[in-house]
Image (tube, rainbow, N blue to C red; front, side):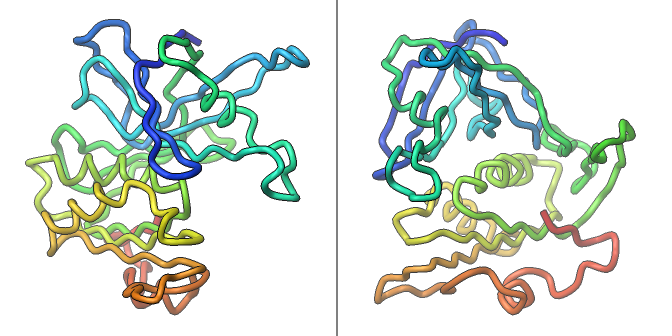
Length: 241
């Protein structure tokens, strides 16, 4: 682990924050492989135990000198099943500018290989409990995400649509939340959809829709997947994440 100081904290919603930490120098690149995530850690002062969680940053090598995370803060005494809330997210929310946090990486099973060039739609997967890397390629990517699970999707989307050598990969995303206010990185997602209308389609679904809601409603269903993603994935050209 290495320590990184908090240099900015923005309130995105009632329970979501964007935390930005400084890298060692203003010229530093993060160097995190696309599709991978980082482990954040602190030591609980009450019991001396280490608390750590994995998060996917929303910035990459295109951002020099810093790394940002969009994280939902799970507060104590809100959900009856989790009376203590999320220890690490609450700790993050308590940090002041200049406070340092321990981080390390990379971590994860999937690596998107074409962020900096190469054949479009190429990625590797490290199989669970097996050291072997499996290489795959797809021209159509179907993504399903819920809540803060959107951040690894945004990481790959950014890699695809900022890669000048990738002009063919098509992505469809189905993104679920409890309410419209819970939708994270909405501006970034809708900007990509406007910039690449023939290659990226975006569909939301929420449990509690407002009266003027024009997207899907409720939990993700088989019918939603058939309608808004690719109808079949029984060949090598379509992969669902």
